[in-house]
Amino acid sequence: MLFDYLSLAGGLVALIIAGDVLVRGSVGVAQRLGIPNLVIGLTIVAFGTSAPELVISLKAALDNASGIAIGNVVGSNIANVLLVLGLPALIAVTPCGEQGATRTAIFMVAVTLVFIALCFFTPIGLWDGVLLLALLAVFLGGSTIAARRHRKDLKAAAAGADVTAEAMETGDELEDVDDVPDSIWVALIYIGLGLVGLPLGAHFTISGATTIASAWGVSDAVIGLTVIALGTSLPELATTVMAAIRQHGAVAIGNVIGSNIFNLLAIIGITAVVVQSMSRKKVLKLDIWVMLACAVLLTALAGFKVCLGRISGFVMTAAYGLYIASVYMLGYAG
Image (cartoon, rainbow, N blue to C red; front, side):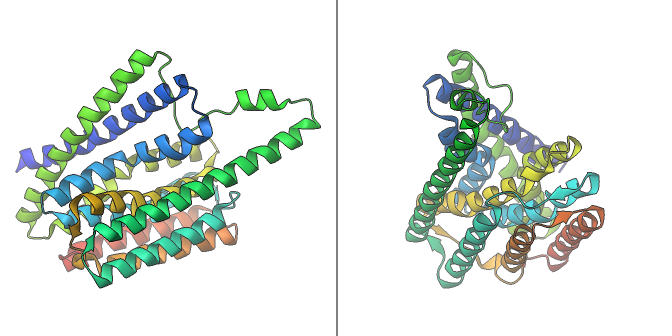
């Protein structure tokens, strides 16, 4: 039994490290090839940071543990709102008025409703995955247009100041990615290590999780909704906590909204296309409704430009603890 716990913990650590290494290597190669940072941020970084969740869901679904596949995404979306936003608010005030956050949050609620509808009609399959990936393409296209418009406005404002458009372009950094390798060969090594580490991490995580679930007498969805979901959300949690410590908490809500959209559209979409049939019954009674409530809460926070303080952070963190307790008391993951 100890080996299973070590397998689960070691697998999650390997996933996080491999995902980070893959992102750095991919960004390094993309920059060497002259791909704009805007495109890198919306595609490579976004997909790369979701790589642990994607590999976990694919591996679980292929191993007939679709409870982990769907539970991982649903649980991650809940953790992203209640924990990833709640804990940093205990450290410093977290503003929720980031530009464009309300519009994107409304899209997130719409995507959540589409996912819920798909869960109730049939087992999530090929055409459901195609629909989700089509919505992902719409999201990426809209994000690209909005980002280009924002940059154009910044350059227009800079034209009347002492900052030139060329200087702004040079300073357009990828703030979320540190220590990008300068050498393309080092970047390729990073990519290789990431591509090897992700499936290995997923193998040990799924193996340990399914054995532990059987020993505890709960479904694999319980483990997916709690332990694995929390583990794969650790990078986002660490990022927002460090941002709060550095008094840069304003970007947290945008990162959470984007992560939740990618979880539903990219991870479920790709997994459904590959596996073509995933059971979703174990999350229908409780968990998807908690996820929807979190999406609506996030939209309200963005729409009213709320600043989360210590009381709000405590309430959100306590709500997450209550949710976790409810999942284990129910035993069948909702």
